[in-house]
Amino acid sequence: MDKLHHIVVVGGGAGGLELVTSLGDKLGKKRRARITLVDAGLTHVWKPLLHEVASGSLDANANEINYRAHARKHYYEFQLGRMSGLDRTAKKLVIAPFHDEEGAEVVPERHISYDTLVIAVGSTANDFGTPGAQDNCLFLDSLKQARRFHKLMLNAFLRKNHKALQGAEHTLNISIIGAGATGVELAAELRLASRELPVYGMNHLQASDVSISVIEAADRILPALPARLSAAATRELEHQNVQVLTGQPVSEVREASIIMKDGTELPAEMTIWAAGIKAPAFLAELDGLEVNRSNQLVVEQTLQTTQDTDVFALGDCAACPQPDSDRPVPPRAQAAHQQADTLFKTLCNRLENGEAVPFVYNDHGSLINFSRYTTVGNLMGNLSGRSMYIEGKVARLFYLSLYRMHQVALHGMLRTGIIWLMDKISRAMHPRLKLH
Ligand SMILES: Cc1cc2nc3c(=O)[nH]c(=O)nc-3n(C[C@H](O)[C@H](O)[C@H](O)COP(=O)(O)OP(=O)(O)OC[C@H]3O[C@@H](n4cnc5c(N)ncnc54)[C@H](O)[C@@H]3O)c2cc1C
Image (cartoon, rainbow, N blue to C red; front, side, top):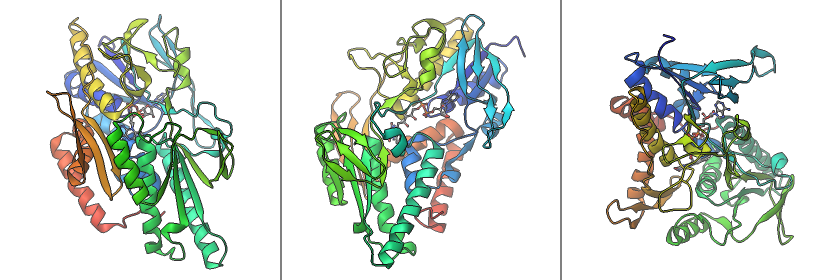
């Protein structure tokens, strides 16, 4: 067992979990290599679902994958723990002590040896040091945060419903800072929640009592996407009675308001920070590995870190160059998915001293889902390189297929089909919103 080449993947997210699954099925099963996944949590939920968990339109329990059970099925080992350091000479990674919810130490600091290390620890929101943001904003970086948001939102609705019953002022002001895909989709999910909740007993509150604003520093929402898409998304948000504020940099976040750079104060009892990303800070302290200003590990086209050919990085935590572009690969689930595919080939080759496969990002386009209302997006033509605008049911189908592709990578076709069927049944049996 010890003589086997040991591949350690840190981070079982959109990219890392797909990678260990295929490595386990191919190399672990035949005992050609030992595969270990290390993750700070016990379960995986695909991150692009988090805003649906936050609004309650998706029950995370039904979409959660337990790493231990998954590891057993796919011939890899799982270690619960948070990576905190690296010794490249000894080829060991450091796992911080593990504490339970009461703060008691369960497992002390450990070291795990590796022959090949893949770092896939994702990213968190970047508040760019904005005063008050850490204390007064909610974030959607993890399942825990999404669940917390959901509870706070239900309580806020309850509080305002009670105020309405008493005839008191009862407007609930929710603001989302950052109008990238996450912020825009979250706004639509929250509008759905505000329309549905009265149906479930909070009938003193109207959807119009819930004021939702999306604030963007750039001069249009979805600034990274084509202008036509951002115009369509603006129209849809306004149609959903969501206030769209562009060209409005935020200078401070207070407990119940937001201060804009021009001094304007916007009331906001709930503020969600969804602007920008940065990789975890500990990456900047990893035994001399090169990082950029956002703490992302700088990698070559082969996804090998620039200082160590035995250490790879993928997904949001990696700054991977793109040929013919001065911008790195964007931090998106489809990029992490494609990088996991490329790295799988490279790591299989490595066992036979083969070449590392260069990664080339294939942008299939972008889709923005407005909850159950509509979807808009652009699809890239593979041959022409030009994008095609789509919306409505066809766009929604493409949007949903991104998650189904992730499920196929983790469970195979047959099980994904069964899960899809179970989802349909579950939707028919349960309320449209999670109410607890
Ligand atoms: C609300 C929301 C909506 C999004 N919607 C879309 C979308 O529609 N389309 C799209 O393409 N992208 C979307 N994204 C972006 C997408 O989720 C990310 O690009 C993608 O998840 C990155 O994958 P990853 O494997 O790099 O990291 P992640 O999926 O974030 O996984 C990182 C993993 O690393 C673990 N981890 C972190 N630190 C440590 C540590 N120190 N030690 C051990 N484990 C650690 C975490 O527990 C996690 O399991 C969305 C993101 C958010 C937040």
